[in-house]
Image 1 (spheres, helix red, strand yellow):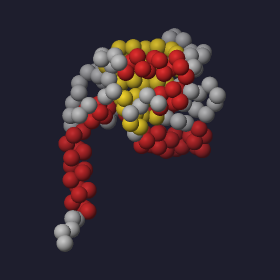
Image 2 (tube, helix red, strand yellow):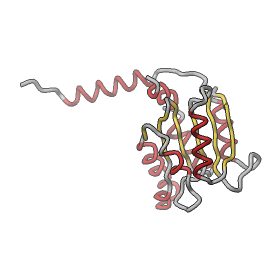
Image 3 (cartoon, rainbow, N blue to C red):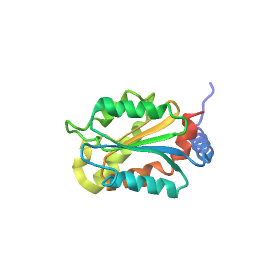
Image 4 (spheres, one colour):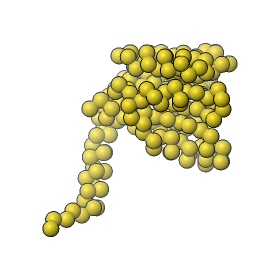
Amino acid sequence: MYSVNPLIINKMGTHEHKHHAKHKIGNIGFAVITTSNTRTMETDESGKWLIGFLQKKGHSCKYHAIVPNDKNKIKSEIAALLDNIAVQLIITSGGTGCGKKDVTIDAVAGLLEKKLEGFGELFRMLSYKEIGSAAIMSRALLGIAKGKIVVCVPGSVDAMKMAVQKLLVDELEHLIWESNR
């Protein structure tokens, strides 16, 4: 009977992953949706930080909006962006908690073709190190729809920085490449 050494399989998987991770997409068109009943373009610190950070990395903001905490309005905005050929990445800020007004995840989840659960798990792990057990109230999410990456992050600047700098930025081009092959 033929047997395969599991160590060889794991090495092949690691090698293949590293090979694919080298694919460069270049300038990524992105959209930022802040879900809030109180924030404005002037007070949207998370959105402003995100746009500045991604632009410094060579990417282009194609859309930025403040959308009320309304499931149907959020879903409509995301659906329109999924049909926008200039946008490859959609990031939402806010509405990911457990309160009644936190409906972003509920609006977005049904639009996704694939959910990448590891993002939320790692985000909560990192959050736990920063804020303790309150991290269980976060519903951060990453998924794929129509070949686009959709990310939902809590609305605080610190949460946005942690999600983007520690989890998303190093895998962004690889995620986009994988979602379209």
